[in-house]
Length: 280
Image (cartoon, rainbow, N blue to C red):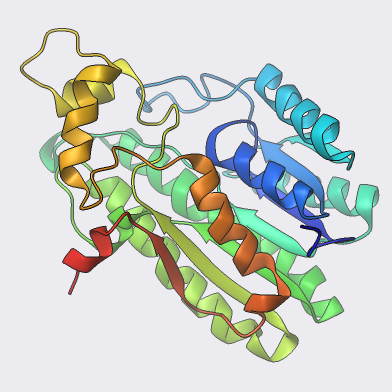
């Protein structure tokens, strides 16, 4: 497709899942890509599943470079850490000389009723899913302003458009991402920079495919599996599709990164399988 030829993209949380798909899609359109990821399975103790590994990070690099012949720079960085994010930005600029596109995608998900959300669970969720977006944007934005060009794209969720039981901390973070990015869009509009959000419905990744999440959706089964939860997810979506493929979200990301979207800013693209029709 090549409509992003010669540009440089940063994808946070790029070791697997949506981040891997976004890196692959942007590389296929001509971008060199830097993927930032904490790459440490135990880095988020309150998440009910292990995070990506350094092997996952290396596999994303291999997939991108083998398929598209473009450079993919792996950077181990925790978006919760200002020091890590600043070092990742410096490493990316040293390698590529610029950043045209930031996809602030890194995130986690956990669940509990509000009365059972412990301080560490709340703090870790907000630190990763909201503050992590802020820190990545803050680090990259001055460079974009200096060059008077850039695309900022953040991953929220359809959970950021509604309330959801057992996910109040996740919902709060994702609503926060939308408000934050709208504010960024206004601040940088005069510099030729756009800032937008993608809000997917449930995506087919490790974030939802793990035993604790399965038990949340099938509480009457002692040991539910993927096949058990699939009909539950199908009933949740008007299109009767259980979950999006990561690549479905990547198409929206690539559009927002493109010149075709140069006047699209401050908006949220809902990849919702019809779920948006329920919203007021």
